[in-house]
Image 1 (cartoon, helix red, strand yellow):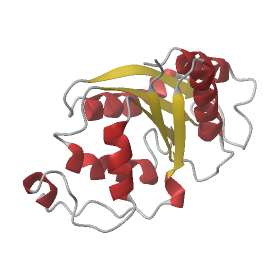
Image 2 (cartoon, rainbow, N blue to C red; image 1 turned 180 degrees about the horizontal axis):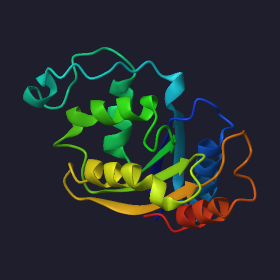
Image 3 (cartoon, helix red, strand yellow; image 1 turned 30 degrees about the vertical axis):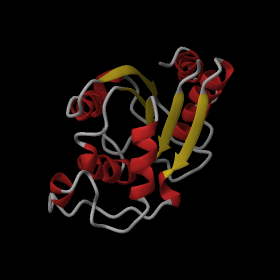
Image 4 (cartoon, rainbow, N blue to C red; image 1 turned 180 degrees about the vertical axis):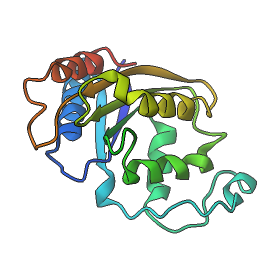
Length: 180
C-alpha cells in the first residue's frame, strides 16, 4: 500500500532548482505507487508565529486565520513530509522558516511521520550546509516519532535550471522511489 506524501516547496520560482529537485522526488514516489501532493508556500498567505502559545492550550488550533490551517490538516494526515527549500545564507528561506515556526501548533499531533529535506543553492559542497542540516534535524526532533528519511542538496546552482544534469536530480528521484 502506498504512502501519502506531502511536499512543501518554499521556492519563489515554481521552476526553480529546489522545486525541480522536489518534482524529481515526487516523480520517484509516484513511480513507486505513492500518493503525492505538492504545495507552493509562496501561493499561500501564512503569517509569522505570534508566540502567544494559544495553540498549546486549545488542542493545536492557531488563533490566526490564514492558509496555515489547511496545511495543519494536510501535515497531520500525511505519512511523509518533504521540506523543499532554496538555500538562503546556508539555511531555509523565509517562506519555509515561517511554516516551520507555525508548526508549534502541531507539537502534540504531528507524529509518526518520515521527513525529508531537499535544498538547492550556490554552495559548492556539504560542509557549507551544516547549519541547514542541523536545523532540519533539530526541528524534526521536536516532534514525537518523526524520523529522517533523507537529505538531498543540489550544490553549485543558482540560475533556473542549473540543477538539470546535477547528480542531486537522480538522488532525489531514487529517494522518492524509496520513500517511506
